[in-house]
Image (cartoon, rainbow, N blue to C red; front, side, top):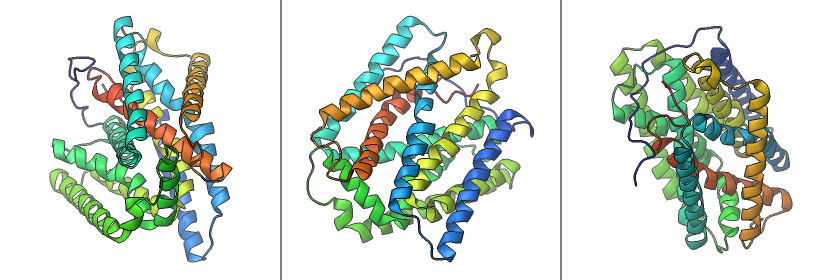
Length: 350
């Protein structure tokens, strides 16, 4: 498929955000919040305490809907500002086309579509996070394309692969609800082959972490960027290991992904001409409009699927439905918003 732009964007040079800049403060905020939650999870495990599933699901919906929902639309708006009308129309048509195709895939093969959706979440968390490293933390230890791909896999894999290893019951339960939304019946292949799948996933992911970190050390000799990557990678793995799965995923996106992408946008603002910058009221209005449009798409999907709650209770079904919905949005978000837009993209780093 043709790209939206034939221009290519070079990899960003290694850089470090000034220590007291707003962008640096936001990055530290993401580390501190996830670190505090990880310590809380470790403490709860040591004390044999658990968080009710109801509390987890409420926390998930607060994090994903109330805190994180407007940001996805804002990423597209920020990317499309001051670009040709023809480009924007082509962008929107491609986005809606990929969206419709992914919904259709869920109806035809819900289990395979869910696997693709989870893979997309890995890419979003990892590839988006890699661009934050380019802009704010430095990537002198990632000098080859395979290293960058591996770094993205390791960071994104913490979001979707570590919970499968540590919280398999919750993982399988909600995955089952999600495919049942589209009319699938019976247990998932994941449930019937869980030990084999966990062994394969654990082996591949563990090896990826070792190769990524050791390769980065050998390339850079233990640079500041490598130490930052080591600390953040460890934090993500510990966080998704000890914080209960639903709460961990629900808070990861607003407190880590969105906060850090906002920091990236802030960091590159000096390279944006003053007339192109958004005022706070316009930014707020844009995010609200984006959220309303997203709710419209959500309502359309709810009316279209045969079993919107997947056979679950109201709260669990709402979590499953919303998760499917954001997974469907994520694929065109990445493909159209970044990969086909080689000149800029939603994760632009000059």
